[in-house]
Length: 356
View 1 (cartoon, rainbow, N blue to C red):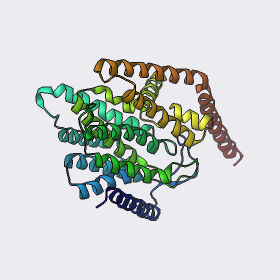
View 2 (tube, rainbow, N blue to C red):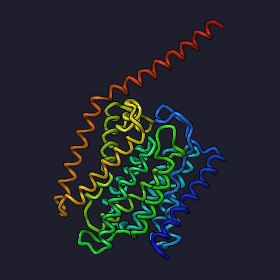
View 3 (cartoon, rainbow, N blue to C red):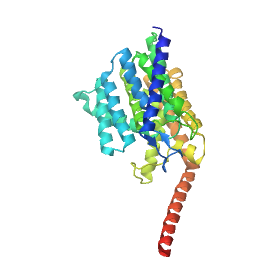
View 4 (cartoon, helix red, strand yellow):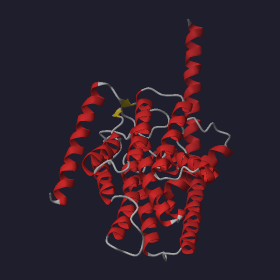
């Protein structure tokens, strides 16, 4: 069968599954209600990102169960995350599930060896942390889908070059898997990459955590095939924003487990009133530019890769700090307004009680 036709059929199947899920979510009231952390103001269907998990099952059913343990790992963490989307689970349950799923992923990658246990342990912490950062960054319409695409395109380019016989790299995953996940991302973006209050669905934890594990599996395969850890640069923009925001919150003595709106993208969307699609596009294009520069402009040598990575980290960190220095006071004003509202509400209740 013609390759384009195969992918066309898979796209239509994914689209049909997504539309079917919308009916299920609507019937069972699987929705996302806005709160103080939210960048949306209307009720939206939650869990549309389940399409990423479904894409793995569809790919495996047609192309073969080549990555069974990776499939089971994503199924486990996506399943637990979906339950958490419906009824909140304790942090401990989610964290245990994340480590178990990541260990299953590592088994698929064949790196669970006792003689290197400390490396494996460190890698587990880093990868689980990275998946949570990707989840934290899912806060405005389109950003998860756009950023996933910005990571998938470079992966597809490298893998395609390898399969075409390029000396750049060896193949690290089946190319059809990358293409099917891209198709799933396109389906998701049809309903999420929209202006504020226009999204049909949100990814939910099932989507943001699910796609995080998929990306980490692909990047992990790439790192193992090349021996070059600098390919983590394909997640650099999220990494810098997420890590610096965590450091900022630690400096403010905040509880890291509580919801917040302190990421740079949240300030753009909320305090600066920049459109969701524009914010998502900015993050995606910035990541894509860094990744394509890494592929096409940086010499294919480990030392050059490290220099490029460090330089990119420094530039992004400087941009982040300068942005926060200029605009963070707007968020402080927002928090002060919430306190004033709470104070006025409490005072009205007290006055009403006195009158009675």
